[in-house]
Image (tube, rainbow, N blue to C red; front, side):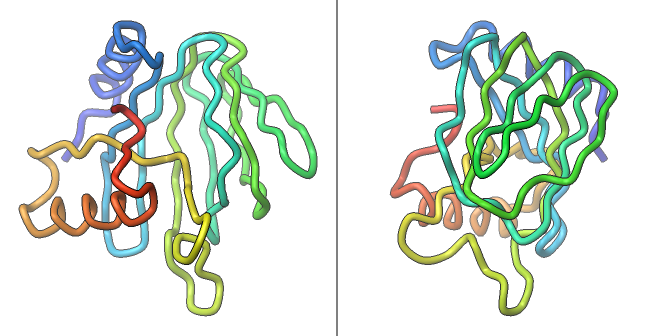
Length: 152
């Protein structure tokens, strides 16, 4: 079980120290369900990427702008379903959010095929996942990014 408050504090601290100004970590991985803490420093943008079949963002701290077919700003305390279209995310302030995704819905796969980057590709927390879960998650991440990861 993950301590959410610790994960949030750690994520923003790591993002502030990282050259790319971002950090992500999966806290829950249960079949197609993922809950990932993502931290972005002000001005950092996650490039346009495909949306999973179902996703929500809960802003814990800060403010981000989500652009795509429509633009929206999400700030501290808000919980919102995410678009089902390609979109990008820009941190308007140092920000930490909980991204909840369902990565596989029959007939609605967006995490496979050409150009299926998601942008929510995390560093795996070895204490939370079994070795098999870690290997599966890393294989999926590598397939989606051609070997790149969000926090690399």
